Image (cartoon, rainbow, N blue to C red; front, side, top):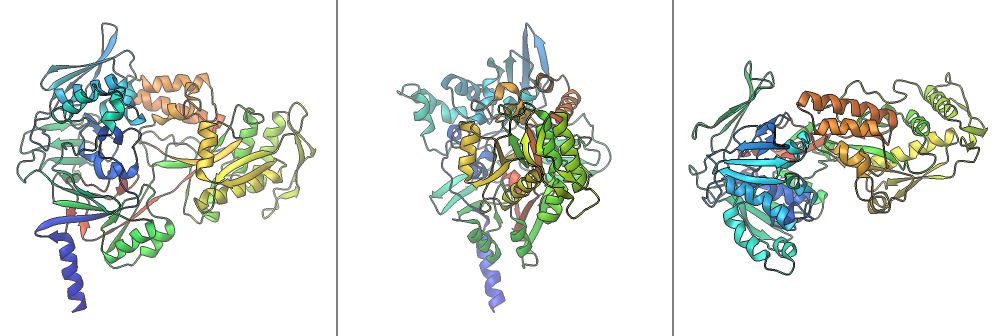
Length: 607
């Protein structure tokens, strides 16, 4: 009888009055329903999970990282004409908004012009500022004009900008223009605008739940039944049997059999995003069956993952992460402005030992800011300084590098590599720079063990190895916000340890390391400045082909491994768990299911 009651309760959870319902857990409340704010100062993973999927973009990427059309009918070419670079985008004619109005060139032009005219703030709108003009050619054609051929920015920022419905937003924009502060007024409007999907926002109870429900009747949603076909050789096809729309990749062209077929729904009527105060409570809800999946950009910890193994009704998945932890140097200051000093410290840091012994396999060592799973952009030839050396050999290499740059000691360290357990015969003391002056005490800022035990532990090991050679490095485990403030706002630091979540396409190379992006105005906290690197990033951005872009970014990875504005440390897998009462179209995907916002847009199913 007890088992029967549990089954009946589960049915009530999944099907309320005949509706197919999925329950997701959020760890934070949403803060806005306004798309202009959502991609501006209101940007957060929680807002994105619940809403970002409902807006179209001209281009997107499939699960394998291929650039594909979304609201566009094809991937357009960049053409040089009359001293400008233009992109003419043909739109799909078979899309419409959830209020019934067609998706047209009017929506595209209105979105870009509104962003530029009102100067909508926010890094997620940055791509919309690239074109000097966006014009409507006809109802289904839009033309973009650019001063420079920044190929990667055009494809992966500008043409991936979220598009809004002109029919809905034009009255608000016109009213905003009459206000004393047009932007503030527009961003303050909390509304539910049309979606390009069959689902949209419903009831919202702050601190309790957010409802997303079907707003388009079955049979009246044009992309319903649309097929995404992944071929064995990497080829890709979009096919809509209802409207006749079809697009086929040409690099590579599909060959062989179809390895994965994803068919568009919707298969559900409602998603309830339940708000939980912390992850522990959300995971309890998952185990009880109150929610089907816990959305979290970091996924589960390895401990949480292990605790869910064998739990009835729970399925587990592990995927590579799009992100990395790193150690950054302030290259504006001595001795971090000396490359050999940075290289010596890198030689001391044994990533394999940290990840496999200290962190017990819960982290994956990295030598480049492009994760190996991101195979298209990853340079497998990049090696870390000291890779494959023993502990004693690492000490010897670090000493050689320091001596090469003119460093010396009052008491030079003595190393015996044959003593594997402890090769340090005599620790170094009184490290002096090439000018004969003592190296001052150096501070390494790292997150506390409570916030991130992995980084805290790694920092302590780095301090120990450095002091073995007389490098006066002291770790300060501190608040995350203090590190961010000192590194990005005040630029007042020696070294710090943080992490980045990154995109699949390495446009972040410019933000993190190009010389004109130096903090506090930009994200280049080390103050790294290398004309050769800058030239490679320019080549990457303005490449005529993706092969040229890949070659430039692979060379840039080699330079970073040599110059070391960052020491790339490790990444962590994305561990996730979900109830077996729901079904995703696939679970093997870079950065996990959470990176797809839990697949709310018409492909998640209730079993």
